Image 1 (cartoon, rainbow, N blue to C red):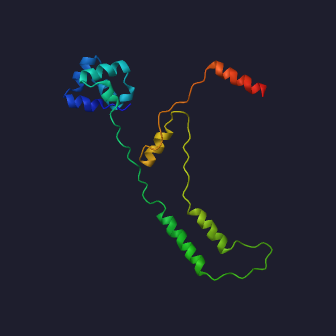
Image 2: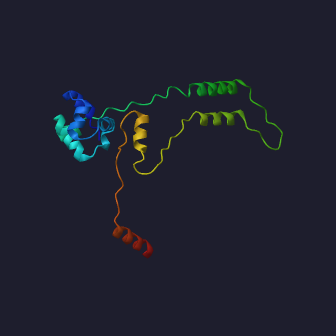
Image 3: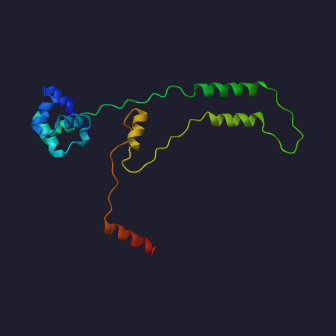
Length: 171
């Protein structure tokens, strides 16, 4: 829930103490709730919005600010430069004649194949329980809202659990 309680209060021209006196809570609570509007109890929120002259539908439909992406910079520039230097060195060296030893050593071509693997970017895996913030973290890293957030798993009733356990035992 992204309700801009601070913005609505400032637009009306009321102070925190004034809103706190009308709601019957402390101004510290007003300050806390303005910073974390998702923690406001629903009854208190309804009174608060009424005091500010904002209807519930307007407050709930307020657009959420876009996420600011994380700029990683160019972390691979130095690595790629060094890998390219190694490749240039390998290409510039003359080929090695076949060595007469029992175990053949790795060739420069083998090293070049390994260098190709080093140029691949890593994969990132986010793991955690339900509602742990994985999708929110991925969206913050990407700088856009690509993944849905806030979905909860469906709850299974006790009778459904017993039914599925019974089906598993029959199979």
